[in-house]
Image (cartoon, rainbow over all chains, first blue to last red; front, side, top):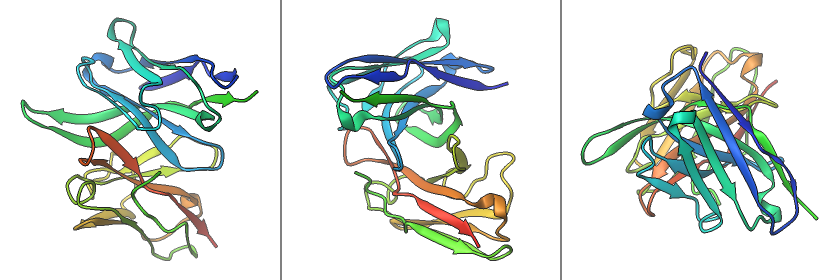
Length: 126
Length: 111
């Protein structure tokens, strides 16, 4: 069964740090790009970060750039999100999601996020 | 802040057709394909439509998507009670160095 399982969420004070993990199983993790997406309480979805299968391409939303770092370990079938300088507005459920894409030598064609984890909750509060 | 605008709510009775709009710009919908996600209450999002109008395996054919210019739409025909959920459009945006944007979301209520 294709599955993504997030962990590492919790309560942290403003200015603190947290590292989220996402364990993948049931598919060849090293062949897929991955994303982190978050959802604040009662709000809509917000894309956070993207990492390509080889880690050669990384993108961040402006709201987290310079504070969050996405990474992956293909040998461990795991995706990570290191979150530093956390703010109240970072409080959210964080989902990891598999990206379906095809990349040629010049362009990448994206087909959506087809597998999602159940989410892990991050609460930033004093 | 989302750059894709959706109506906050839509509703219909069972069997009716409901349409949700998604308005963007030349840098996102105008330049890239649109995906739609369904989020049932208390669950993770699910890919409903990709590449403007393609359904992943297992998605009922009562869900359909279309795109024209800088706008897209999702139609649900033969509305069923289990379709009551939040729906989000999404697309990559070329205006900045790598940015994926979700729509504001639409809550569909089955009356």
